[in-house]
Image 1 (cartoon, rainbow, N blue to C red):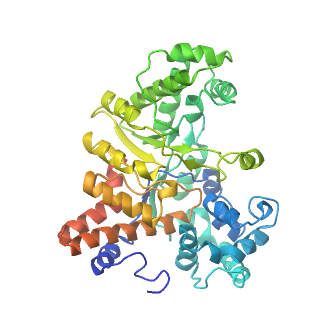
Image 2: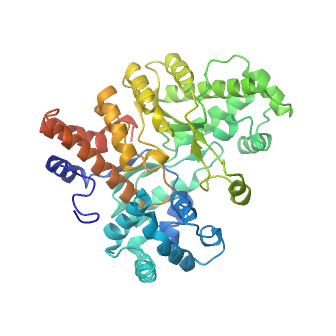
Image 3: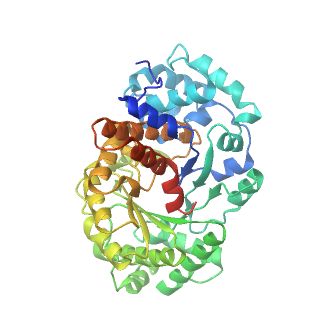
Length: 454
């Protein structure tokens, strides 16, 4: 088997047939972190580093593991210097999915067959830059052309005004991009800048927020604003899932707004109550509520102090009990709310699959998330979904990415793993071929499109 050939990640003949049937299906991505300003402005990418690595903390982490100086990752070195530094150590990254993703993108979308290494990095950089100077590689053309994106949902703050969504969709000629309502900054009452953020919410909606009821009114105004602009989902990030049934949120809010110290129980109680209110808004509008659980963020103190959040200093922690909070939410909104669970801890996937099984078709397991979105993690999760829950109940693949090329490499990787898992079941006599074909198409395209109202 040659590197990234047609059999890449597929170990059986039936899997090759299934992949051929789903390979060219349009991409439906319910969760990403796309830069809407970049898409709306639709300017040519400046260089290969901007497109391949400038926003990808997966790449940054691997370069740090290879002891590349920070100056050549997020520092002030030129894009060419950074790309050449990446090329120099890139063979050392082999075995990690970053190695496959970048080579997939080079091969599929730039026609570059050479392996990225110290000797080839300069040629590859120049070849990519030559194509990036053409209109075919502008952001909007990439999305609607070779990447074949039919629908995508970005991740947006409660106070965002969403004008770039409107500009991008108007230029494309249809609503390709929908916003996603993410009110985490209002929920995380423990954060040092929480009161400053509440002041921003006041300015955004022209109101005073002195009581918990005022915050709930601002939430509803924001939720309505997003709904009017095509939003179909909310998104919430929690370290450990809080119980949503809490009656003293108004008291905790008063303490926090006056700068008083909160106990851990008060913080968790407030966050649970906040999630319950958000879930009520979602249920009223038929939105999907996404819960991203288990990411312990910014554990590398020096990195956080130097560069801030979201730069590659986050880990999972198995010592988290997600069950009480999940059960409280699902029982409170049983059969009234669509919920998708993602978890950073691979050991929690069986628990999540069993919970979604217990609560019917509106509770679903999201794609293998973050550190799990690898061939190993995807395969394990798919096998759990099929054996505990239902393949047909899968919420669908998401890119969870800040760079557009992820719609190519990451979705191809997922579809190949999916085809391999289903194909192996056919060849073991567990599935009829026609049923496997139906499941492959449903899981890769039509099922998520329907569930997320896209």
